[in-house]
Image (cartoon, rainbow, N blue to C red; front, side, top):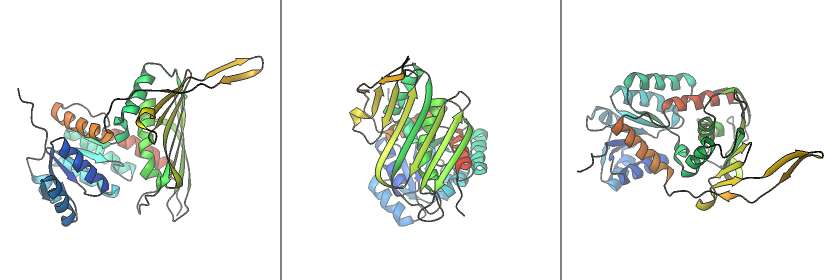
Length: 321
């Protein structure tokens, strides 16, 4: 028996991330069209993959297109996502899905009314190392989670509309919210602008009702790259290091910690590295979007997750006007 044909996908936005989406959906046999406000750019990418170059109006009106990926400057995401849903098409919106809580809520409301698949592009949720970390926490291997901290720093990219917090922190906030399973009850932000009015360095401090605490450090003005998420549990600690080699991306530290008459004592041990299956996170994310279209399954990263991240970003943003 032949499997059902893949849903037909249009990628809107042919910049860096849209090009990656187009390549990935083409590899999955699902790319049908590309679209960009610069017709020559769309035409060039369409030629690479032997698909149609279309305008956004043509994409929305075409009954053969099942789903749309939006990889645009974020100030355009909300209105375009709502237009896609109102046209009766499934949507995958890159992060952030909007630049305000009000616009993000409009997207969530439109998704709820449509009954269609509406997914946020939180790609690291599909990383094999993070999926393994989630499974370990659910199985109790780390014990009770006490603290989560993330560092995502490097040099560039410098956007005109969003600062380091909005550009970089959504990755780690989506991971932290997935691990805690709850929204924070307290958010405090600290930011510093070195080049213009937008923060180049940003810290977020989060507190959750369960007692978990967390902090996020994001910087686009740093001399070295770091992509690290650390989870401190009552039994063990784990580090997801996305800069490390594949066989060292997820490390578990079972350090010994105890209290005696001389106070708290500790003994460090070498980390255990978790074996991970192969698989590119973007490929896994795109395949999940296609599966949700086929089955009607709720996506792992619905637009409501995008709203939850934007609520934190909005509360923690430091203005430099």
